[in-house]
Image: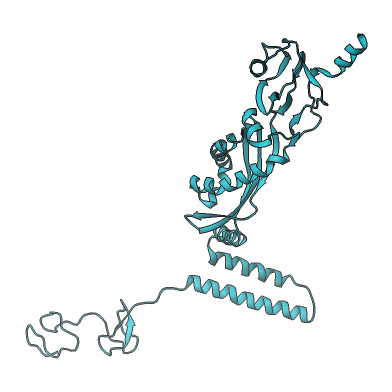
Length: 345
């Protein structure tokens, strides 16, 4: 009798547990090797794990972290599914899935193609972005139904492609809805990351997952736009272009004067120095040139003279208004008689 009892006991499972030795396993189906689970067996579910019992293709009971003795009290769904014709201590067949609920970190994402964006300053621009995100299994039942099904073993690589494409496809909408100018994106990475986290959460929930964090490491503009921005920045740093030109000319003149090379080198240095000196002189002349002086014709000969001149530089005539010799009243230029007293001028 002890021999047959030993054979029967060898076909029963009395301890069910799983220790994860990898860092990327999400689902592990417990290997029963054709054995049946004994009612009263010990089930150990460790932290960051969930055990799901599947009976004849249907989800039965879900066990959170802890230690359980499988009984009708701890397995209400399985008890309802089984008739237990031979008593509650009868063995039963069921598939046991251990689901890893820990947070999977450092999941990289990036735009394979540029994302089009309408910017208020640059118009239509193309953006590239990359970063990292992390997620975990939040609803094991939904995850079993929607993702891994009856897979014996599932790793992060099985869902990373789907999650990464979900992130990238939503990125263009996220940036457009944020309405942040392209020049201000770098200063708002944290705000954009939080906005993306809230926007992507419902899409991950459909798979039984939860997006824990979303980090934007960099958003880059096209090369031609960056070059235009660099030129604009350089112009702002230079400031007054006239003073900058004078400074550059003076520096070049100093370098040419310090050139101690002989022969052709000396001649080239002198020539460069003279040319730079002329550039400096022209720069100062252009800067210090007085504005054009307004001119009026001479009251006597009609030649142009500067406004405010008292005498003509050509004929020497006084430019003050003439007056009558007798009565002293003002006369028009060239008048022969006074219009007031009639005296001959």
